[in-house]
Length: 203
Image (cartoon, rainbow, N blue to C red; front, top):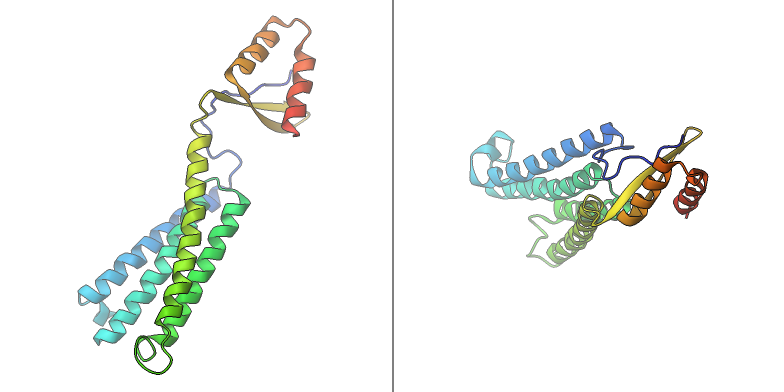
């Protein structure tokens, strides 16, 4: 007999590639470490150990590390969470803008930062601002949708398996109770319920 599945199933990561989850977690950790290292470069002797002996070189290295670390953390979050394709693409585009900002920063700092005929501080800031804003928005929507999926507020997720093919449909508690009662009673309604659930799963 086909199975209706587990109500409020605890398998949050079902169907997700564990390698992607681990890679996302590693990317997030590396991003956080890059930001912390960037702070240490300009506040401790770490900069000299990394070859940034003078203040300008240390500031450039710190800006680069921080600039790369923040989008890496955003990418790590959406890789770990069960996010949609739209959210993944949105964060990737945002991270791309951040990389453009970092690249401009590499060209601009310090000679063409805020002094000289052609300064690039504004362009750098705008590219990075657009990138972080866009990435943050899609990270926020991924986190919000994840919380909603794990707090169904009266909804039940049913899994229907038929001929080796799995389908998932979300129903209200009342519908779930009606389906479960009909199947337990085996009053000849099982096939009708299965067809109804299959039609809803295909919508």
